[in-house]
Image 1 (cartoon, rainbow, N blue to C red):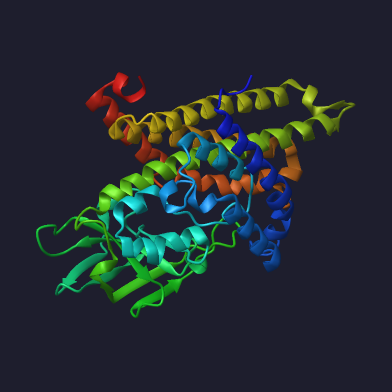
Image 2: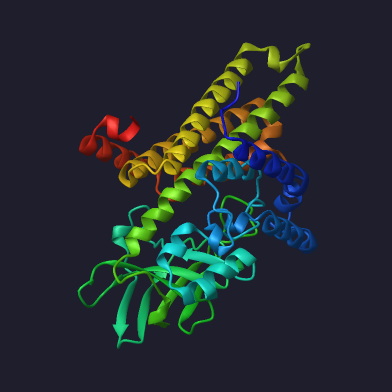
Amino acid sequence: MSLALPPSARAWQAKLKAFVEQELIPYEVEAEMNGGVIDPAVRKRQRQMAIDLGLPGMDAPKERGGLGLPVVDQIAIYEQIGRVTNGLGWCFSEAHRWMFEACSEEQIQRYVLPIMRGTRHECYAITEEDAGSDVSGLKTTARRQGNASYVIDGEKWHVTSANLADFFIVQAVLTEGEKAGEHQLFFVDKGTPGIEEVRSPAYAHTYEAHHPIFRFKDVVVPAENRIGAEGAGMDFAFAWFRRERLMIAARCCGAAERLIEEATNFAKGRVVSGQPIAEYQAVQFMLADSVTELFAARLMTYEAAAAHDRGEDVKALHGLCSIVKLYASEMANRVADRAVQIFGGRGYMRENVAERFYRELRVDRIWEGTSEIQRLIIARALLKRGQDALIG
C-alpha cells in the first residue's frame, strides 16, 4: 500500500529519486573520506542539475520564475533528498515564498532571484551562544544610524553554509524607536566591514558546508537591506521555522526509508549459524518497528503538507509542524540506531550508510527547535485551542 499522493508529487518523487540515486549517493564515501568535499567538477555538475530541475525555485511564485509547487510536492522532493548522507543533497540554495512577500523589489532583484539562478548563496545568522531554539534570548542588536542605515553588533553561532555563502540573513533586536525590543531581519553582504569569523568548529557530520561563528562589530547596513516592515522579523522567522520543520520531517522520512532498505538487504545476506540474520526474530522486530514508525511519520508529514495546501489556520499549522518535526526526527534516530545494530561491526564503519546517518540525524532533534521546544509548542497549542483545533 502506498500513500495516495497526487500525480505531480509522484512525478517529482520519481524524478528526484533518479537524481539522488544516480548523481548523489555514488559520491557519499568520497565525501566522507575527504572532509565532505568531492571532485569540484562533479559538485558543479550536481549544482547545475539541481538548478535545471528548478529546485531553487520550488517554493517561489510562478510569476517570479519559480515553480510555485504545492507543499505536498515539495515534501516529495525533500523526502528523496533525505536519502543522501554527507550533505550532498545541499546542492542548491532556495528562494522561499516568504522572501517574495517580505522583500522590496530591489531586494528581490539583488538577493532573491540570484539565489534561484545559483549566482548568489545565502546563510542564516540567527542562533547565538545563549539563544538557540528560543530566539527571544537574542542579544545581537540593530540600532538606527539616522534614516539611512542600521548598525549591527553581536555574535552568531552555527551559521550553516557560511563558508559557501556570499551574504547573511541576520536576525537582530531593534534598540530604538517605536519598535525597540522587536526583532528584525537584514540582508548583510559577507564582505561588509566589521564582520569577523571567530572560528569554524568541527561537527559530528562530514559536510562541505561548515557552521562558523561570526562576530558583528559596528557593522553598518543600509536601511534598504532591512527585510520587511520595522519590527516584523519574527513573522518571517516563524514562516521559516514552519517550513523548515516540515522539510526536516520529510528528509528524516527519506533517511529512514533508505536505512530500512539497506539494513533489510544486509540482513537477508548476512548468514550467522547457518541462516540469514533476517530469519532471527530479534532482527525482524527491529525492522518491523522501523517500517511501522516510518509509515506513521510519512502519513503525518504528508497530511501536514496537505493542510498547508488547503490554507488552514496558520496557528494550527505552527503546532502541526512541531508535531511532525518532533515525531519524524525522533523516529529517524531510532531507525538509525537499529540499523547500526543490524549491521553490527560494519555499522560502526564510516563507509557504512548507517554509521553516517547515526551521526547526521542527531542534529534533527536539535536545530530549528529542539524536541523539547516542539513539545512545549504542542502542549501550549493543545491547552490554548484544544485537540480538535490542533489535529482535527
